[in-house]
Amino acid sequence: MPDFETLENMDLGRVKLMWTNYPNMPTGANATPEIYERLVDFARRKNIVIVNDNPYSFILNEKPISILSVPGAKECCIEFNSMSKSHNMPGWRIGMLASNPEFVQWILKVKSNIDSGMFRAMQLAAATALEAEADWYDGNNRNYRNRRHLAGEIMKVLGCTYDEKQVGMFLWGKIPDSCKDVEELTEKVLHEARVFITPGFIFGSNGARYIRISLCCKDNKLAEALERIKRIKTNKNMELESILLPGIEAKRPIVIAGPCSAETEEQVMDTAKQLAAKGQKIYRAGIWKPRTKPGGFEGIGVEGLAWLKEVKKETGMYVSTEVATAKHVYECLKAGIDILWVGARTTANPFAVQEIADALKGVDIPVLVKNPVNPDLELWIGALERINNAGLKRLGAIHRGFSSYDKKIYRNLPQWHIPIELRRRIPNLPIFCDPSHIGGKRELVAPLCQQAMDLNFDGLIVESHCNPDCAWSDASQQVTPDVLDYILNLLVIRTETQTTESLSQLRKQIDECDDNIIQELAKRMRVAREIGTYKKEHGITVLQAGRYNEILEKRGAQGEQCGMSAEFMKKIFEAIHEESVRQQMEIINK
Image: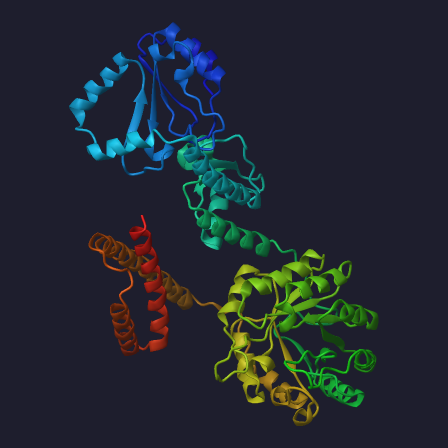
């Protein structure tokens, strides 16, 4: 608000105009009738003309007011407004002013000498817009209120505080004290959530610890930004502790091994003793086995927990099994099971996961969560969050691949990019690979184990049976303890710390290539938008199937000539075409 005390003490003898702006840009501060009254009084006493810029007066402003509503204001005040802000007419470059006839003539004299005015039809359209009924403003503000709510939620997720009395089409928030500066926060959000938020310092030093969110952004974009920011805030801040149990070395791979199912006490003990003799420390066996169809072996049930207790007693190994219900959890805890895991079918059901999480409240036990059967990273993370929210901090993930109807080499497609993204989102979460379920065949276990290690997975959970061919479930994907030991001994464990100077140089080249790709894509999208404008002007449909097919065929052939698969090129150009269509649709629908 104006510092009237300072203004009164200033030498204003040569001052003719004083500019004010309410609701204020950039702060969103609103004027009150009392403020306007003091400004008018000040102007009359000092013989100054107040020029009040009032373009945000109708946006999220419960009681829009004009400085000209103050008695006597027309003799000393001019008020400007902008149709781009108040009436959603950006780009028309049309504003309006109100004052007494003398002041209006001053402005007309200047305007007539420096420009020729806007196209008359646009001026007439703007004049019509000024006649809008109150319902139009109410509807406009409903849109802004929804956007304001979303912007406020973003502020809350980021830990920012803001004045709820702000009006206009921007929301300002003060960053939390935990942030070193505003750039630290906005850079984090930009690089990790791919969302740009305006740092306040670009408006001056007073904005150094503030961010600004524009309400010009459409609702769906604000909602998407909110979800992206939520993910980095929840995922990165998930409070986790080591899952390592006493006596387990903190080196890759951590191995969990044992039969798919606990079938008989003899089979469980025989397998466990062979694995223990090979140095394995953690034993696995399914007690309850959810099958795709009824009629198959669905697990031995609670009876098998006693066999796992005997494994602990006889071999000193830790024991683990899968749980799918609260009852399973209670029975396992009662039997002293050391590690639990949640299966893929269960992960896909948030109700089941929540039931397990509720049953685990107050318990300190390592819990591993398999990916859902469908390739849904958010569902996977959601299951981890539910269990973490129940107070469990010793969590890990198991990648067992994803179901598909197509004929394929693997039983479950690895889709390695999904666990890689999980690692990026939750860096301190240990990830195990389940090569048995991914491969579905024992001959694929070894190469899948090596792939997992090359991708920096933390551990392996492998199905190992004393007599795999006679296994009651998933016989084809189980290996003997001897074969497992052979596989593990052949693994090459590469470490991140072995980065050489030459590798750094190559990575720098990759970064430069990526920068060039982005620049070329931006250029391509600019051309696509120009094509969109042409199509709009000539009544041409956006999608031209013949041209699209031509692009896919040509680019696929070009890619193969350069050593890339046609399928890879097809996916790349499908994504590029989808974005081009989206941008052209925006132009056509304007």
